[in-house]
Image (cartoon, rainbow, N blue to C red):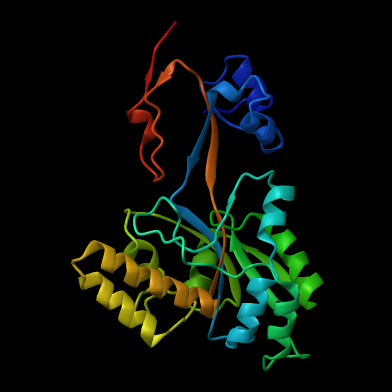
Length: 289
C-alpha cells in the first residue's frame, strides 16, 4: 500500500495508491456514502480479538471480584465511538463473529460503574487496592491511545492507580511467559478457523499460552470434551459454555474485534476479503483501463 508523503486518502484520490486504509477521521463519511471515496470502500472484519489479560496469581487479580470490577469499569462503546470513530466492533464475547462456532448467547461484562464499585467493595482489596501496572508491547494489542482511555476510566470509576508500561517485544513476551505481569494488553488472531484455536490455546490450564494462570476444572472439562466431540453443533455448544465461564471469571477482558477499513481501486480485481491473515496480493489482478 506504499509509503510516501501526503494523507492516504489524498494519495488514493491522486491515483498514487491502488489500496489504502481509510483514515479514522474520514470513516463516518466513507461508510455513510457521503464521501466520493465511498464507492471504493470495503470493510473486512478480522477473525481476531483484542483484550486485557489479568494475572490470576498476582494481587490484586487473584480476587475474582477485583477482576470483575475492572471489567465492568470499561466503557468500550464510548471509547470506540469517540476515540476511534467507530472503527472497531465492541467484543461482546471472546470468539469473533466470523469464527465457526461463534455464539451470540455468550456475553462479556457491560459497562456498569455502580456494579463495578460494588464488586470492588466486596473484594479483599476494598479500600486497599495496590498500584497496578499494565504492560504492553508495540506489536501486540496495546494501542497507547486505547490504553490511556481505559486507564482513565479505571481511575474515574474505581479510583484505581494504573501505570502503563511499554516494553520491547522480547521483554514483553518474557514477562508473560514467566508470569511476572499484573495486567497486559494483547491480541489474538486465528491460525485456523476453529474455536479450539482461541479457547483451548488461551484458557486450558495445561496450555503454555495461558499466561493468566487461570485454572477452572469445569472449563478444562468442557474444553477436553469439545476436542473429542464428533457432533459439530454439540461441540460448538460445549465451547460456548466454556467461553462464558471464563468470561464470567474475568481472567481476560475482551475489548474489541478489529475491522480493516479499506479503499480499493476498481481496477484491482479479486481482492480477498477473508477474515484471516493470508497472502492477499498473490490472488489479486490489476487490470489497466
